[in-house]
Structures are given as C-alpha cells and as structure tokens.
Length: 174
Image 1 (tube, rainbow, N blue to C red):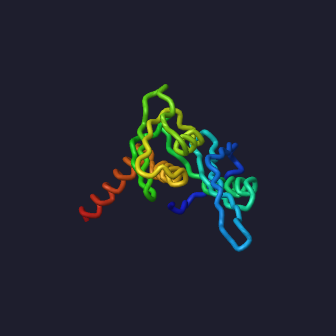
Image 2: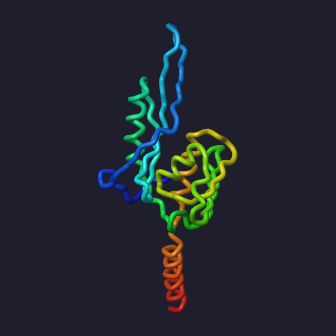
Image 3: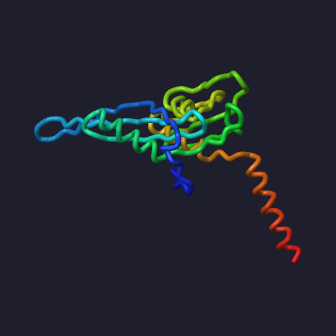
C-alpha cells in the first residue's frame, strides 16, 4: 500500500475494532507441530476513517492485540458523499479484485466478508460491492482499503485541474 504523507492520529478518534479472521498455522518440527496464529482486524470510527492490521503470535489474544495496534497505525481517510462513496472504483490486489459502487440512499451495505467489515468500519451506509477473483480474506480487505484510499473528492480534483490548466495557459502565453 502507498505511504501516507499526513498521518491520522488514532488518539483523537473513537475507534471500534472488529476481528475479521483468525488463521491457525502449523509448522512441523522434530518434536511435533508448532502452532501459531495470525489475526486480521479492521478498525474505524464510522465517520470516514478506517484501517486494517495483521498480527501474528503464538497465542490468539497476542495476535489480536498486535493486529489492533497495526490497524491503528495504518488509518486512512475515506472521502464520503453523503452515506456513500463519490464514484465507482475497481482495484486489484494480488489475485483479489474488488468493485465498489455508490448506491442510492437506504440501499444499505451490499457486501460480504472482509469487504463488509472494512466498509462498515469506514462509516459507509449505502454501497454496492462485488468481490472478483480470489476470495482470500486478507487480500480482499487490502484491496478494499486500497480502493478507498484511491478515492478523491470530485470537487477538489476539478479545482486542482482548473488551477493546473491556468498555470499552463499563462506559461504558454509568455
């Protein structure tokens, strides 16, 4: 994922954590199997801030705590237009493709699995989603975060483009 220039301070927000997935991994050694756990956690304030984290440890609670800490460090801000996203976007992360479409008011969150957890934590109330390709929970969650991080406010983008157009016009006039 892209590095953020403006970090969001998690202490200012009231964040809710949601455990999405726990994976038990075993490693075969001389004395038998060594069990380890990885946890995928989504955190968000329900008001346009969301982050995901993956923690790995020998016990489940330790893995969840690590994942919570990582999710709080990786918060992104999601531009919302009302209760939905401004426009449709499709993103691929690994073999997982995620399609996010804005929905009319009172449609609700039409999503499944880790996409639903990410979208609800971000505070999006009306959205249509489709998961294509891999159904890997980790990759679909990362693809959803990537899609939400690539969204821009349409008004701000138009203003930026107009200002660069004016700069180009003045540069060619002189």
